Length: 116
Length: 108
Image 1 (tube, each protein chain N blue to C red):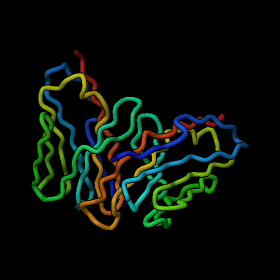
Image 2: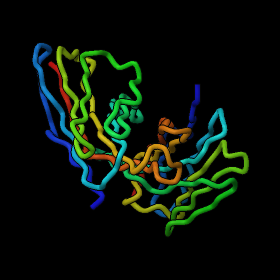
Image 3: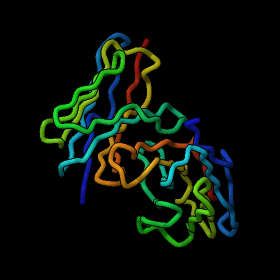
Image 4: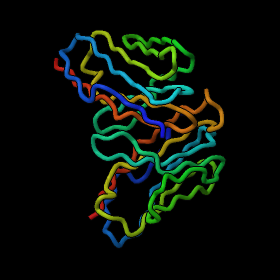
């Protein structure tokens, strides 16, 4: 099973709402990632969790709050977002971030977020 | 910081024509990965190149890693409509840094 599952597939929220994006993998991968992708742009790294600990935060605004409850789950909590935050949010996982030959990333289908 | 440049940004070809996208890094890469993203889809891993001068083939796709490990190319022979999508290279010095991608359209 090489699947990374993201829910919901689509999300519309107002600027005062609080919502969460969820990501799950059962491949035994120990690194999980959040990316943001705007239309016609490459994925842009937001956060990296290695062994359930936050290892990279690419200067992401605090209105995005990641959480890794266990090695299979990754959440992204959203609060007070802006319309410019509308994008495709991709989750990915890789086997072992510390080993060169094993950092192939498997992406989920993404959550398409619209902020009104 | 590390940058990965990718050209061309767009490529329109007639079905059956060949296609090549090029990727260049400002620094030496540990490895390079190629991903394909279909319209409305998500990036899907194609291949990873690790060794200097490495060449790998997947059916009609040929991937090459430069001798200096700073550049790479993806060549598709005799494109088909199923090849449509955006091809991203991604350089690794730990985490992935994506090139801007080449969007391929194929006219039947």
